[in-house]
Amino acid sequence: MLARYLSEPSRDLSHPKTLFVALGITAVPFALILDQPDLGTAVTLLPLVATMLYAAGVPFRYLLLLVGLGLLALVPGWFILDGYQRERLLVFF
Image (cartoon, rainbow, N blue to C red; front, side):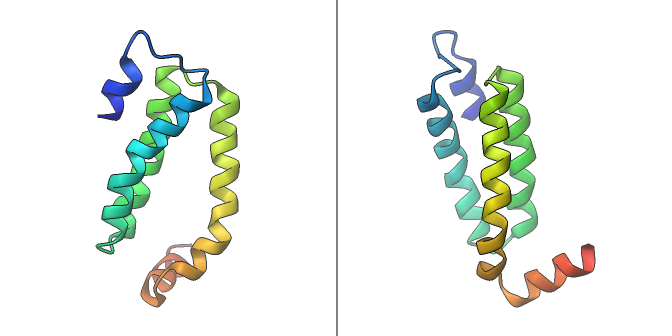
């Protein structure tokens, strides 16, 4: 669905509304997968979406903004995770 949305020729990829709609399209499966809880699969969606946005031609400044917001979300996100999810991440790192 995201690929179809981004590939429409009439879509203005430099408009912020396009980015918000693309993130909304991504947020639905991300939230449903995260609710399972399947953190690994949910996190796998993030680089896929970033690659799709880049390949579609979304301005680089928007991609940098998303990375910055993602880094800011790490701190509160850590406390939302279940204990076993935190343990798995600590073991991974």
